[in-house]
Amino acid sequence: MKSDKSHPEADAPLREHVYDGIKEYDHKLPNWWLYTLYGAIVWFIAHWGIYYKTDLLKTDEEKVAEAIGVISEKREKALADTLSNLSNESFVNELANN
Image 1 (cartoon, one colour):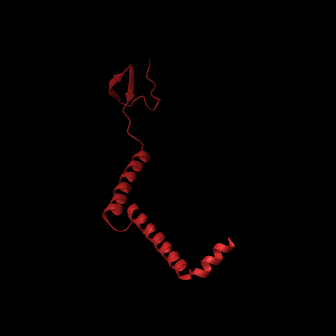
Image 2 (image 1 turned 60 degrees about the vertical axis):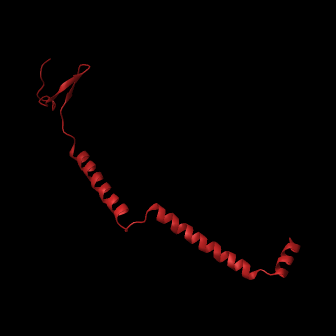
Image 3 (image 1 turned 180 degrees about the horizontal axis):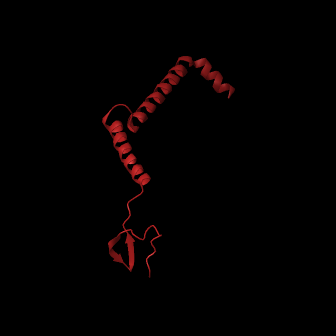
């Protein structure tokens, strides 16, 4: 087979290993792929540090505890309102009407 110099991979180095008769070219990864990888690594480290090592962001546990606190306050307020408006006459009239 003759070498075609117009082909871009004609001068590319081959890897030393051969598997099932298949030879691999030894190309570098594209820059956009490398920048994406490096950016993801930097984002992960920054997010991990901010989320777990500082108090800038709330953890899921803190968010759930806050939501439960708000629900408990609303429930206690509704119960207090119901108990303050409850009397024997209103209770009997409501039961009689229903």
